[in-house]
Length: 321
Ligand SMILES: NC(=O)c1ccc[n+]([C@@H]2O[C@H](COP(=O)([O-])OP(=O)(O)OC[C@H]3O[C@@H](n4cnc5c(N)ncnc54)[C@H](OP(=O)(O)O)[C@@H]3O)[C@@H](O)[C@H]2O)c1
Image (cartoon, rainbow, N blue to C red; front, side):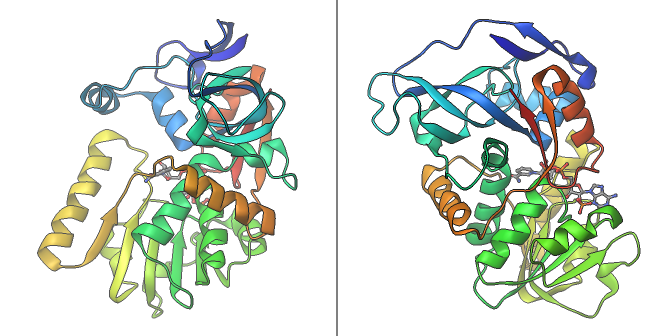
């Protein structure tokens, strides 16, 4: 099969389409004929590499896959022993490692039936961005109906899911984004949209129950300024400068939470089939509509990862196969 294989690291130039073996079918796993796979910041970071990423993968003993991609949508080609939820021909979406390829093998409990009212491209956009927005807002921040939520960095993958999910949870949403994304973010149903190129939102008098920081471009101190007493700041995004900056920000969050007894939370989203079903319900009810900026064929997959890295993508970038 054809796959986008990572050969080295440093930039998206290391990604090349190659012929490799199809993943073997194993018990509890589903072989998916990939129709679409979305690109995440994680793919960009993995391709760019760096010492801290290498140390982190060694510590976590994560296998270095030469094929990137985790979000997927496609048809079930075959199912392994003990798989009961799916059969060949089903349309599915969710997570399967190494999804920038014609076939990917995913665990049964990381996939769900694709809703009929969304395309493969839209379904493939859900995975990481959907989990991050849902788990961060509902579970980490504990967003309740009527609360005021500020999403900083509302125009990218995680940001566009966050605005819609915060609305679905009943919040009043203020979205902060860049100039060329104001329209799309407004169309997602944000109650108020602030353009960060024109205004410093941290100087506004308004205060929020939850500040959901996807952009990671402002200091923790300035973000706390717009929090209500008893509010929570959730650090979602990672600093583009990489390892040391990322760990520095997390450390600062831990110290501040302890020393100042303020709620500053960092979290890492995880796969959870219950949450995937929850997201599917939101898709079916129309409360969540994944927006796609650009799609790229697999042969131009390197360009898709490069484009995501510019920070200019309006919502999600998807590779189609
Ligand atoms: N904690 C977790 O479990 C978790 C999971 C997934 C992703 N993440 C992190 O979340 C972040 C977004 O991921 P993604 O996949 O959504 O990537 P993305 O689509 O490329 O989003 C880029 C983000 O950067 C912001 N940005 C870019 N240029 C900016 C600028 N000049 N000023 C302020 N903000 C700027 C964007 O805000 P605008 O679009 O509004 O300009 C947007 O929020 C990444 O840092 C990623 O590592 C964390």
